[in-house]
Length: 249
Length: 162
Image (cartoon, rainbow over all chains, first blue to last red; front, side, top):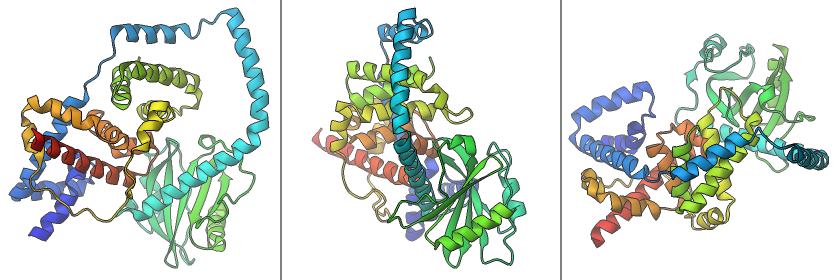
């Protein structure tokens, strides 16, 4: 009983934050109803949450400040002529500077995307429920995304290959929704991320974007307005083989 | 103005100073207006605004100073088994203890303070917090848990002193 409660208590905050899955919530509700110690703890934590919510709403902006901001926002479109020219000159200088920096920026945004992708991949594997739709059947996984992400995509048939589809989940890259598919190959996991091309506006000259010394290999390609990333700690040949399956589909 | 009161409250909690909070909010709106084209319709506007505010704060002088004092123990450490049986929460049924809670919040390291505010005051989902703070959801959970533990510790100290 004590052991059982310990594992409930570990999830107690997540439960009270409403972040457990529907099934877990139900199970938790049932447990709290029968376990007085967990119920007492839950009550105490709810009270704490409420107190924090009240105490946290502590500072209000002054009327003066509100007016100032309103004015500054309203004033934006009505720039004077000379100001407009000054801004244009500044903009021209900036554009020139930007062009010089484009190359560097492209590289740094590629690195940024890589590190985001790698984080998402690792976070998924570390999670106790890595995928939200669990199925080896592409005809189950693909429709699950309907209405959850603003685009549709095709999944390749992986039967009779060394890859197994584990499932999928919604994901975000720079606040843009996308799909994440998880595949297994010989005990390695490969994540395939799909986003709309326009939401990852980076110059992808090369297919590979993993920096040197990275434990991950990443391949990226574009297909039908969508940008795909496949990432894994397995060898590049595996990732390439999976990418080929996608591209052939 | 969207989110004005909430952003101000959050800014004041971060900076702990009215003038700096005003500057921070002003800069946030200016940046948001300038960068509105980079905002993707259909994605989370609130998380985007908070993210701008927070990033602006972290690169300010006060922000840089505040982050220096962040505890360095590992974020995704081992399993959490330490359960407090005698929680100080019950004491807070009485709202007169609000001051104690406020002062404990003020003394929380900035990373803990902000995540508690986003979760409890702004009632953001873990996903939204992850977007706002640019961290994975797993880190949101572990950081929240550490923040709550740290707050409880501070409260207990204050209650013992009192």
